[in-house]
Image (cartoon, rainbow, N blue to C red; front, side, top):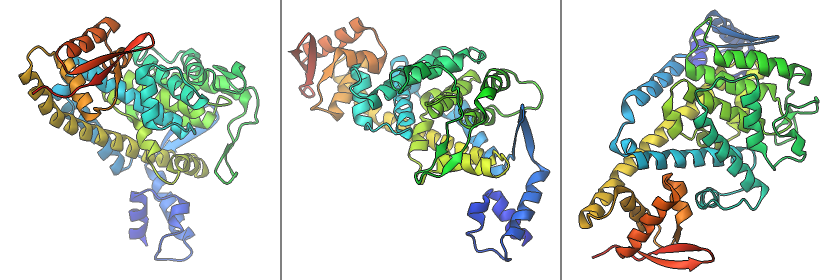
Length: 405
């Protein structure tokens, strides 16, 4: 039986997971009691006013943290990222992915293709769901600008929430304002209550005092920055300080903290995409397992680190893809030395989508360049014969004519 206890603790199974296993003794409660006893030996504790959280650092966690640290230190410095315009394009694409997925988690019914097209073309959102995505995108861009600022109690959180929820709430007065009631509950798809947040009267102290102090200070016991960011993520969801927009704000604060702690790799990662692609509602389940087992954060950390690992893997796949595509760019440059690297990238993207018209605004947003620069790029490509120019209303659209012989 001891062997089973150590094996199931290695994976840190919750009681709901354990009782469905084929166990060596009956009832399963005996194994569960022993598992809990061994867990307590190495438990770490974090207290916030009357709320006490605890967690274990599993070997599997340390392995994933090492993988992330090593990836940031060694693996992600290819020429494609060092190149300024490609770096900007990569970051913008990742911010879009994060904004879209974070909104989709909360129910935004917009496809990635439509959402990216809206953001790239700077089209005004036509629906509330599109507005959610645009708001998230603006908030993510803002966080990259204020990543070195402290989590001032509680202005930065309120500012982030106001940006995320603008023009999407039933009551506009709720934008950037803590809830003033205890009517909020978190339900599953069957209508069962999963979580009852703390009393609204305690929000100011928990957020403005305890949470901000925890985020800004490194006093006391050392907590690995990624683990600490995950704790902040959980706390925002647990406290549920707003009438709506809590999940999006929680993920934004996690993103801010990672950048603040010099985890620049998160600028290139869409962790919410990894969460969105998780099947079976495991994100909510991670919250539920933590709360139902004496606020044991290990379950939420287990899930979050798995999502981060997936996001890093996705970066690796993207870079491999970009390296293959770069050969095509070199060929284009060799055929026409008059093209800049960015102009060659534009041609390369048009090769992939030859029937898709492109606009100056889209180049501005995709490559993070000035309007005049984008205009010159497209006019130059038209001059060289790669594009055909058409007038559409007050702006030009450009159509790919094909590669030159």
